[in-house]
Length: 496
Image 1: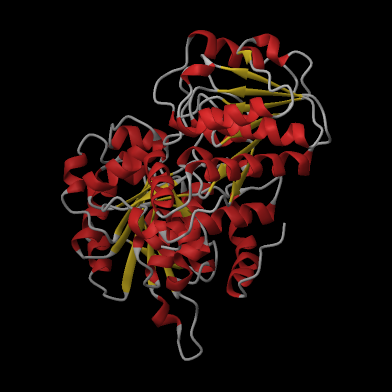
Image 2: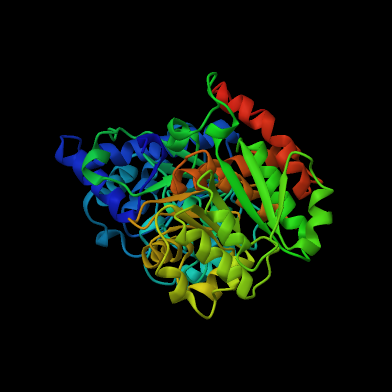
């Protein structure tokens, strides 16, 4: 996995700091660099104004003292409110408080709402990413007071009250305009609701070398082409359609649009052939659709199983519009029993809600499960934050699990996880999930491993939605895909 896409947990970031300090960089130098990075981001976005800096009792507060000193040195009027006693500060935070005292008036007020009065900008340097328990008392009161004021807020590392590892709110949380973090993002910068509360996120270089990641070995990454571009199945000049796989989509008898959306997406993403396997009664509906999609009526009770005997039909999607009855379960088990690369989505997941053990026992790492939150709850019943849920589910199922949403998480059984952050809100429309499942099965039909195919499908889905823009309906996604793929192939940015 590329180092540039790594996401670090709070513990891993502490280790990156410790390794850098052990390598000869003093801790106070890292803190100075962190504070300077925040100041640089501030002066780039705002003109001088009165600034209230809220400092906590730990290293995040130490960063706040650096910011105060540097902003005052640039002529900005600054006031500092400190949580706790100044004498209780330790280590680098105490050093930075002393440096603030030496410059200018160096005044420090007790943390209270009055510190905020008249401020044109607030710097939240209270707790950062390391908070592990819900905020209460005076801390919660000042954060709730801050929420009532119309003033831009700059958070240092992570908005106070947001868990750095999960993005969840611990009691109450700052809603920042800008968050400046250091070296690498943390899960909270990408997972909801933390992602919303962070506002704009800037990742600053403070002098930590990339090679510390070799010792840390991260397992969480932000999705992007760098993760899977090398596995992407571009057509070869000497290839033909049979080299590019044959994806089979099971089509339900009533919600026929779902399978058609998925099949079209599978074709657009490059599958050489795509079939919809359906009940004979639904054949006229599917046959009247896209002429490039093969329609295979299941004329016998074992018709789907017979299709699976064809080795050229190498990837299968069951779920979109399939219904939640015995046929859906039987078709999924037939695909898995035949060793096909299999995507189980929508109704296919709900069909196993009360018999998940029947599914877990036959899944492999060539399989992809794509639940939204409700389907996830019915199938897995795992509680916790989204990242923990996805990883636990993948380990339990022995398959790749993609938990959908604005902060989609893709997890592998070995604990590797990817968080996706390019999905616009326009994707919250009927049929969008069917398209995503179709993209995944189309890539898997071309030989892309399930984990990489899931990551690629999610990213392509988001980029296609951005191209389609406001007014997006699910049908637009496959039509926008060629533009996205052209720019991906040319390794150039996708246009806005």
